[in-house]
Length: 269
Length: 87
Ligand SMILES: Nc1ncnc2c1ncn2[C@@H]1O[C@H](COP(=O)(O)OP(=O)(O)OP(=O)(O)O)[C@@H](O)[C@H]1O
Ligand SMILES: [Mg+2]
Image 1 (cartoon, helix red, strand yellow):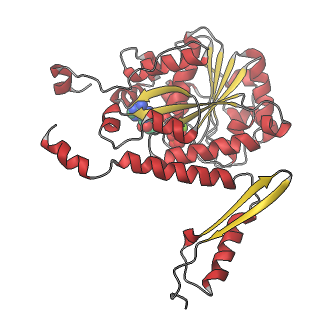
Image 2: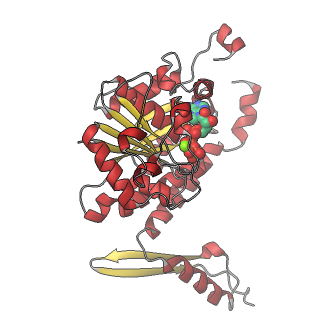
């Protein structure tokens, strides 16, 4: 039976899709059977970040509405044969996702996979709620910035009261923070909330710290999840986060200011 | 320490300000969470009523719902201005 992991944040543009793509790919690299599902109806993007946008034939809503089978809609990753992508629908009908429909698809996925990673849309509306509703585990993506921190606390509150686990009174969703776009230099200058600050404000364990990195944009441009760039600090940090998800202990890296060599300073890192 | 650092030390670091604001806000929002939806509306109406008599700011009225055993206790805190400022 698969574990369902939601990647959520409340605030938009903080790195949910980047994270979903890298975490799913990382779990697949570690031999797990993984499905990654785009819940952002109307704003499909996970396919682009995963580099499979030209192979989307059917989507999530097609499966729910019985227009194709789940098997037909799942796109096999070109790099890992145990990783599959389910694209979001581009329909403008925000009600296309239903609780029953989502439950049916997730139940079917749970039989075939070890992990189902759900990439949530921004906000706290229907799509975001459905993405978190059936989750066993949540990765709350947060940027070291006031509105992102506040929004993630709101999302945590909603998960604590409006998820299925909460409604059934069973053990709650296990929650982790993933801090992305972290800049040790700006923290040292006193202009960015530190990891300790965020931990103190939100009171949750930190799964990983992903540094701000230009290579993330390059990876998106190429349609290759950044975790596959083993020279990119952000990619290495995602690999650490995946290891921690699997129960391994890893020290946090990329939290200190990097001593840059002259070449790197001249040509950028 | 360079000259720039001297300048920088004058202002409190903005991250410290952010942290203080967030600690207060998050605590406040958590306290309201799970409470009935009418709380914010009620808070606004109480504010309006008090304003008929004295000039107060939005943050001078705090409404909180606390649990005391199996009773819900509504705590209302109003900070009134110094005397002599009545309308
Ligand atoms: N560690 C990072 N360093 C630099 N840029 C990053 C990092 N993580 C994400 N970004 C950039 O931030 C932008 C938003 O990322 P992404 O699309 O993953 O966010 P999102 O939370 O899924 O957004 P939305 O809420 O719209 O779904 C992208 O341009 C991405 O390249
Ligand atoms: Mg996204």
